[in-house]
Amino acid sequence: MDKIWAPWRIKFLDAKKPKGCIFCAKSREKNDKKNYILHRGASCFVILNAYPYTSGHVMVVPYRHIDKITSLNENERREIIDLSASFTGVLKKAVKAEGFNVGFNQGKVSGAGIEKHVHMHVVPRWHGDVSYMQTLADAKVLPESLPATYTKLKKAMKGLL
Image 1 (cartoon, rainbow, N blue to C red):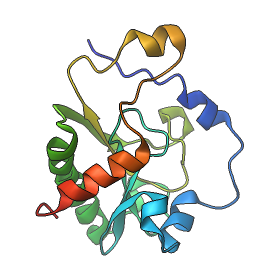
Image 2 (cartoon, rainbow, N blue to C red):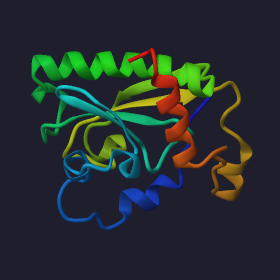
Image 3 (cartoon, rainbow, N blue to C red):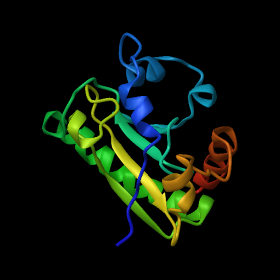
Image 4 (cartoon, rainbow, N blue to C red):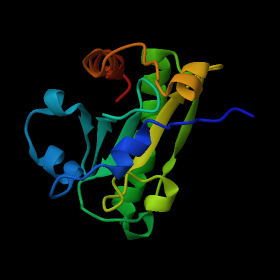
């Protein structure tokens, strides 16, 4: 059985969080490239994860500040699923993803790093993408930088969104 181990994320989870909601702050700013916002929809936006499990890990986030999926309205539910599905296509094209982990983490015990603002993760996966480096060296190997991934995904979005 393959497992995604992310021991480096504990530093993020345990770190003191800045005041306010990072998703709300980023969505209000007008510099999408700096904030790695890939797409803005009517009720949700898509952003690269700054602490990714793998290269190309994106999150689909409602603009409205809500903490659980049961609080999503019909339009938000529809758009969060539609954008998640669309971005599996973008990621297949851009990073040649062979599979995906898609889902919500609700509550700290589930691994939610930002538990007060619900969001859907779309994590690209490849056969053999978990290596000994993470387990033995507490280090992950991401093959490209966030800016390079952002540029690659923006290019792949053309014609798909």
